[in-house]
Image (cartoon, rainbow, N blue to C red; front, side, top):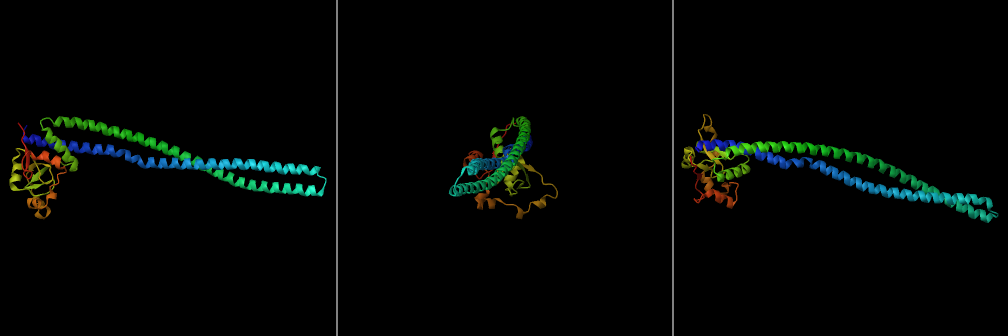
Amino acid sequence: MEMTDVFEKLKSLQDILSEKYSIENQIEESPKKLTTQDELLARLKKEYIEKNAQYEEVRSVVAKLRTELADAEAAREKGEKAMDSITTHREYEALQKEIDDASQLEQSIRKELQKEEKNLAGLDDSLKQEEQLINSQEAELAAGKERLDAEIEGYRQKLAELKTQEESLVPGIDTDIIFKFERIIKSKQGKGIVAVKGNVCDGCHMILPAQFANEVRNGENIVFCPYCSRILFYQEVQEGEAEFFQMGETGSLADFEDDEDLLDTGFDDEEDDEFDDSEDSDSPKDLDFDD
């Protein structure tokens, strides 16, 4: 295969892979869109459970007070009925005291009961409102998940289309190059193949040695930028573009030699070995293709 054809395929593949990785990232991030609603619903349910426990506790108190009130009323009524059968003043005073005590207890219990019944009614109203809110949030969350599922299904259909396009491009290109190319695009935010204009890499804007730039210009091999690891192809500088490539805005191999950190290809040491092709690691990397 001619190298020009390889470069054109790689350019097309770059667009496909960039869109593919973007969609895959959206699929991964999509569930997070509902995280806030999930957390809100969980918090509402927790508050509902806690308030319902409080409601049951108050209801138990109300039931107990109603029993005590009934006992106090019964004690008062019994004393009042007994008034008809007393015969002495001492008996009258003793019975009257029992009636007064029963009445005071009855009033105290009734007052406490009214307070607790009011509290119970307030909790009941609050629980009904929270239950409606929970039902509303559950319905909204279910609708959101349904929309999300449809959105993800659309993403997957698009991925299937991209996979078909990808499979139509990769035949004839070395699998090792494809593997490295994919890794570069992932790590270099969508750019895996860039132009060399003059002797400057259009990906990292570093100045390349003249001999290295000439090798890219010849277009006989796949060559990787020694700075950003992207695949390079040569492109003639258009009129007006030369002003862009100023020494103050670019680096050089002198900078590269002084600072080894500039050679950050986005791969670990083991992966870097794949680029060496048994040559010295500082030399340009290339790969021949058969016609």
